[in-house]
Image 1: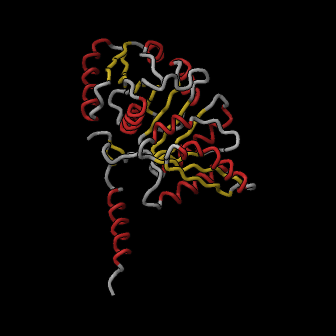
Image 2: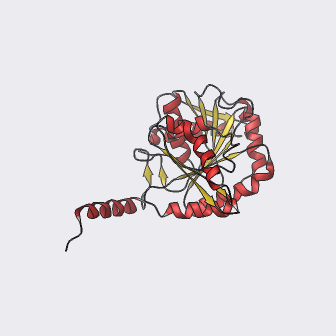
Image 3: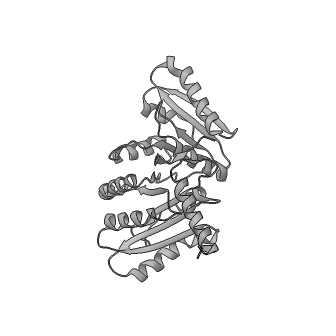
Length: 289
C-alpha cells in the first residue's frame, strides 16, 4: 500500500522545512517569530506596541511564563495581557509551564519548540533598572544561544519610551559579522513607522572616515535599504558619539558574545536619551537579497 496522499503532502512539507533550516533565512523569506518570556503576566508592563511593530505584518509571538501553582489563573492573566495584539490580527500563542525554576522552565520551552517545523527565531527580553534579574537574563541568553535563537534585549528609556515611533539609529561596528538580524529588525520597524534609518559607525581616527562611509554604503547596498536611509560616521570616543548622534526614537546596537554587560546597556540608554535594543544574530539570518 502506498502512503496516503494527505500524509505524503505533510511528509514533503516537513522534509522541505527541515532542508530549508540548513540554509540562511534571507530577507525576502525571513519573518520575526518572537519567543517572549513573561515572569508575572498580571503585572508585566512590557512594550506591546513595539513588539507589534516588529512582528507586523507576518510575524508571530509565542509567550510563556513559568509557575508551580495557579496555572489556570496565570494563563487567564497571560491571555488578557496579549489580547490587544490578538485584536490587531497578530498570530499569538501562549502557555504556562509548570516548574519551580523560571530558567529551567524556559529551557524546556526552547527545547520543545526547537523540534517544531514552525518555531520562534528570536528570544525577546527586557532589562529594567532593577539589577536583581540580570543573572537570570544572562542564563536565558546563554540557553537561547545554545539552541540557535537570535536575541533581542530591550532597555526602555523611563521617560522617552519610543518617542514619536518614527526614526531609528542602527549602529555598526567595523568588521563585525553580527549585523544581519539588526538590519532585519530595523527594516520591520521602518516599514511600520515610515521614518528614517540612520546607519551609524564611529571612529577615533579622522583618516578612517572615507573608508567607513564606503563600509556603510556597502551595507546599505547589500541589504537594499530604503531610500530613507542616511549615513553617519561619527568621530570621537563612543560615549561622546552617543550624545551627538541624530535624535531617534530607538537605537539599535549589536550584542557582543559572552555575558551581557548590563551596566553598559543602562548607561548607553541614558546617554542616548532613548530606548535601546541590543541584538545578536543566531547565525541563521541573512539581511542580503
